[in-house]
Length: 322
Image (cartoon, rainbow, N blue to C red; front, side, top):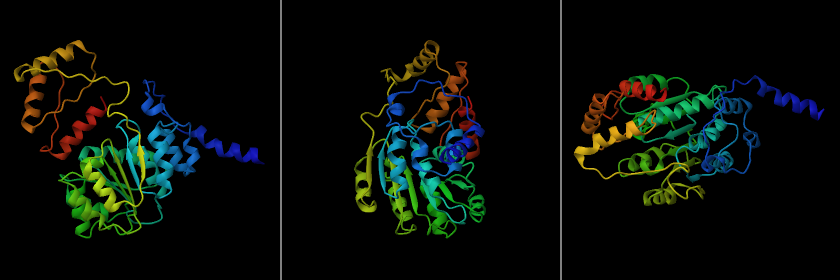
């Protein structure tokens, strides 16, 4: 009898639409695990299906550490590098906790930028594709009217930048009285001077029996102060011995201002680079540099905060798709 049950339990995996195996080199940041499986966490089968079809076969170190603790309802303070599966480390327990029979916001994921909000929401949707969980993105720079209309429909998870969701909550449109899970990704930026007062106002809209999870690569003093004020005996996870992912090499070049474009052109011609991201310290510099790189014969698009959100989304989408 036990054998029959086991076979029936495993049969669903055969019907999954698994992606092609990722053949990229994997470093210790994602391979140095305890050997756990996602099935060890007793997740809903529909969630497991989404996890496997997303291409995850086994949990990464940050996922091993955070998923069982988050499922137990503990507050979490996790320090981990970008690129190690951090988003799924909080998205999986959040999705598992959602009760789709209830028409209410049950979890809120705060991020500092529009692009990260879109990316995070996409991961939640892909992991929860078989759960009937409704995920909404709301950020500044988009139509408030559209957000209001969307919130009159069923929403279980809100992925947001702080200012916009506070505006909606203050107007009584986003009802957070049953939102018992708050995740803050890139918590160091969310607890900067710009965002922290907004975050603290938002917490006042949440119920007292809330769970707060903070994820970040760095934890400045502001995070420590926030932890002592709002978190209840948080479980501390620290998988950081250095900020850079293992296997990545970093270089810097001292060049005069007038030589920067020439230096970039040399790098592009000498190195095998399919795609690259260049950060600048002002809007004007972004546009000027993009123009100069285009004049050199390279395909170059720019993105900055003063662009229309629809244009930013298009550039972001095109870059992700190569």
